[in-house]
Image 1 (tube, rainbow, N blue to C red):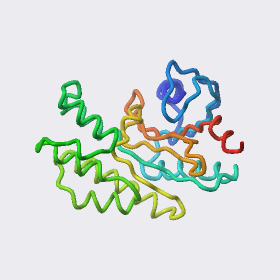
Image 2: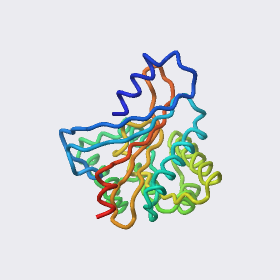
Image 3: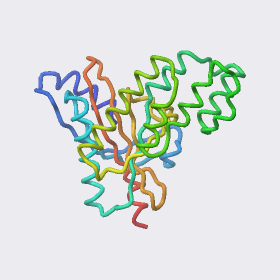
Length: 231
């Protein structure tokens, strides 16, 4: 539903003062399943924040999500962040259709750095290791020698997460840099909220660009997965 909301904000609501806050609720029908949403038809509830300062907007969306989850009495949650912009960079520089590219893709998807044998792709091992707790991932990043473009992308990524953690220390954050292929509809950052008691994804969100190049940040609550938390 987020693309429709984004279209609305950049056209019929283009005259409204920013930031603009929108919410929605509706049925979604997908052609295919994905790993965080096994049902093809389900109810979505979401919120979008458009035209806000980036870090403050992200913090607002995450704190809104936190408040909703707390009100639902779901206590054991964690937010896992990834960088879809990084995967788009890799797709532009590595041909994943070749045999070599398929091996690299398998290494990224399975988080198995031992599959990477070619020296020029040695840096991908360091990227795969940028996972785990925020502090662990950040420390591994700082120790890694990476291509300049990737270093710039990840520096911005970690600074954003540090801002969120600094302004709300109660938020439990993990990082999975190589999970970016789940977030390709987002721009620089995507995140999933997990219920650690049953490993279900109960919300997914991230940033995106509108047709007018305006920045939006949103969250979608997976109501069927949330309901499963109470079974």
